[in-house]
Amino acid sequence: MLFALRLWFLFCGQALSREMEYRLHLWLSFLIDVVWYAVQVGLFEVIYLHTSTVAGWTRAEMAVFLGTLFVVDALNMALFSTNFWRIPQYVLTGELDFFLLKPVSPFFLVFLRYPNVASFLNLAVALTVLGYGLSQVPLPSVWSAAVYPVFIVNGLLCMLSFQALIGAIAIRIFAAEGIQQTFHILYQFGMKPDSIYTPVVRRILLYVFPMGLVASVPAQVVLGKASWELISTGLFIPPLLLVGSRWVFLRALRYYTGASA
Image 1: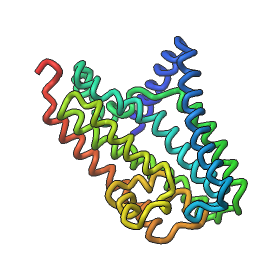
Image 2: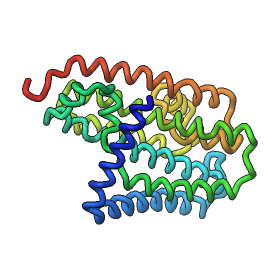
Image 3: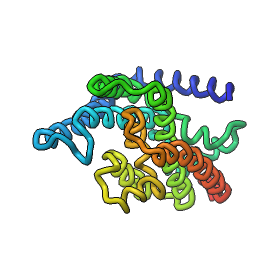
Image 4: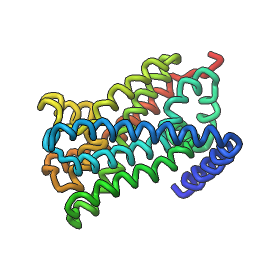
């Protein structure tokens, strides 16, 4: 574990060195994500001009939801997303061969090799939005404040798990840019509170494709709105999903024959 952490910090140093060579690219990447944040906030601001609540969420509570979403998204972009989109390139160019030869878990290398420095800047913006939202609602209980980071991490694990499952498919079918869009489509559902959907869709987003655990459940936990069912779901499903998706991903690697095959 300690070796992996030291290795990841080395990757971060290399990524920072690369970004310093192309600083305009760094700032443009940062600004693009900030614009995305602004669009999401602006969308709900327009909606709240015409209503006081959306599916039981007040404007202040929605700010907490958006802040939670932005934090999980920034962490995913900083840690995993850039690597996820590189998987077809790894397969087609043979870079995956070198990952398999290293004395480190290939799962670790595939999903953590290239940190996204710009997204660490976005994390500061996301935390600012979250802090604003939390300042507009009653103070959370000690319990909800203590477990909230756990649910944030579990939301991140859900995103990693889906990327690992789709990455496993990408390894099997080689040219997989199209199949990777599946993750983006599923993620669209997680970008809205789960309570806006019908009961059937909501169940699907909690238990089948649990994108509802990415931001909606953590936000409800810190706001004191989560039922014990949601709390249990948010605690136990993400780790189990990660274990299963990692197993599927590593099993898919057995069928990888190298770029020259």
